Length: 116
Length: 112
Image (cartoon, rainbow over all chains, first blue to last red):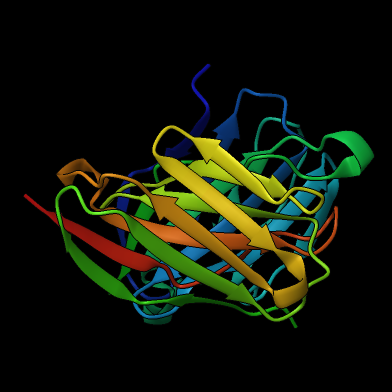
């Protein structure tokens, strides 16, 4: 299994540009989520999905869109990049076990985004 | 709103020492608690997961305990090694469908 994969590893954008961060997992996990990690702020949830066709907002959703058309993929779209979106972005997935409890979360290697 | 706090923010110890990392959470009605390790420039790796009905979990030199009533968890690392140097994060799940809520982590340095 490749686990959770993210592309690209690093990206530079200009203010106002749009882009999609890709996330894929091959473990048949129902639960997927996107976090951003900033110095002094820790990991903050952007959006998450409990299954194909279902998404919900996290703590910091503004400026980001998601969709979940398949179990495997959960792309994160930046609509109009701003310098405040400079961050490291992590995608994670987990299996929903007995009583629909989340099991261990698996994280991708991250995408470093710089918005100029 | 659930809040997770980790103390200390940074810790430096000599090789071979046993150490304890602390995690506290404000709402004791959690479903599970996880400890992660993050190396510089890398993603997170899950170390231990404790379900709400459990009191502790062990993996090798690592032992995590959970006291829901007091809103606390500890990660015990025995006989620390320089390879243990990393940031350790604690995270909780409040219910089956809610995402992880993370603490800001403890940055550990083990000096040879």
